[in-house]
Image (cartoon, rainbow, N blue to C red; front, side, top):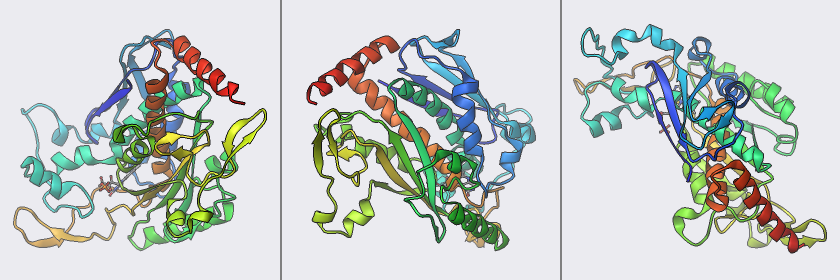
Length: 385
Ligand SMILES: Cc1cc2nc3c(=O)[nH]c(=O)nc-3n(C[C@H](O)[C@H](O)[C@H](O)COP(=O)(O)O)c2cc1C
């Protein structure tokens, strides 16, 4: 019921995203609902020069009137300010086009696979779309999803728990969003955060890059989203797919998956319990709020693992596809570490999956109908208390 499509090249004129399926009557304001997350996606110690050029801001160009959604497709655009520097090699028209091909394909990027797939002789045709610039459009769409989730009482946060070999105390982390948002690496453990900054600076000085891990949590998720009845309706699978679609994400844990894999069953499973007034719940949440592909009423949380980005100031060795000869990879202006920004993208992806799951279960052509359906379901759950 909720779908969205992004379009746009990294150095083209703009990014576009169309979000369809949002009920009518949702209050939406670009400055309030979209801009803050776009700004958060641009931040984090370790970002490169591109973020100094861009100052992302989404414009709502369709589907909203007088500050409220119409129930029709919502179109959002984000202008690429860097387009001014790329008009010749990135113009749409054939006339006056100045092609400057990239043929020294970059390891760890889509360059070579994309050239082989689409029969292209210029890796720029690949990298312009494979670039993580596209995630700005997803964050804008995520802002719309978050506005709908807020109506259902759901909020989403993230925090960084690892950069390279620096690991934060996860018990400290996640406890205070204000501390996270003030941290240059979006880490809730200030001592570890300072060491993460040092590690990023050392990587930059060495011409290297760093990856890491972020925890992304959806708070106050109602039990019963997703389904065990069919493989592609399982919420755990849908979240994993969404997270793995983020460039440079190479692993996703739903709850404490790695710890669980190394533990006996007696130490892993969340015990269901009943408390009068509160109803049914679990005494722990190691499963990440997901049981059999269905949300179980606890917070939904996941650990997202980012590889170190593959464009290094000291270039990796590669091949020139024109000659087949070994050479240094092409260098495209680059970040050193994107884990803090990637965590914001992961929040948007979790928001989009959960908004879709809420609409699957509760439907509603208007926000009023959506809310009535949720209230009615919550009343049914309350009868179990
Ligand atoms: C927010 C964000 C920014 C990124 N910036 C860069 C970058 O500046 N340089 C780079 O080499 N990779 C960057 N990446 C990662 C690449 O886009 C990604 O590794 C590449 O497209 C290949 O995809 P894959 O790693 O998922 O296989 C970034 C990823 C994210 C999430």
